[in-house]
View 1 (cartoon, rainbow, N blue to C red):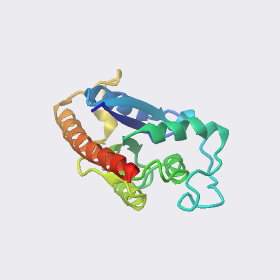
View 2: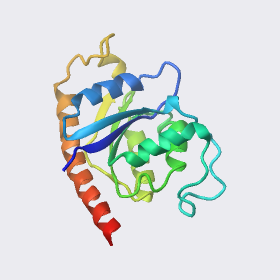
View 3: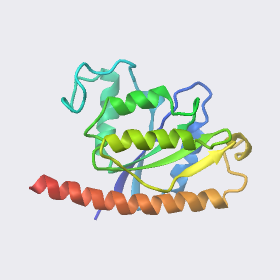
View 4: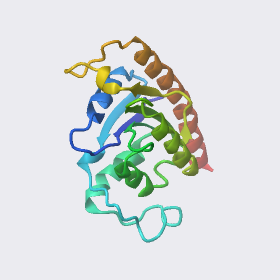
Length: 194
């Protein structure tokens, strides 16, 4: 079976954000079981206003022209890893907009998380995201990667100072992602044949 398509979504659009550094580190940990597509939300138009009809009722609403490529790349993925900071004990508004403009793209797919922030390492944002993706019928894997006080963990070139624990966390999450993404892809293919 071909490699799974893994979309690595950078969830912050804030100027000066650290997300691309974290995403680059994680992308380098991904093995050949996955084809990785790094999707940076800062590259797309993500309006705060949602479509007039909820995506549950109209799964393919007319989207802004600046969002079309983003939607296509989400739809092509078998699984997602969301790289998120924690803002005020939750995740960024741009990420919420990206999620809410879509419905079928997330359905029956595996989702993992890489969080970073001050003391909590993004865990509060991750917990909020688990609730949201559960509502969208996506499967969030148990394992995650968390960088508490990330500004002390990476050097000026974006390399981790003590990578062993974080690499082990990434490997464990990718193992779970592979298992679930494979099972869910098989299930979606079987459903399509019914």
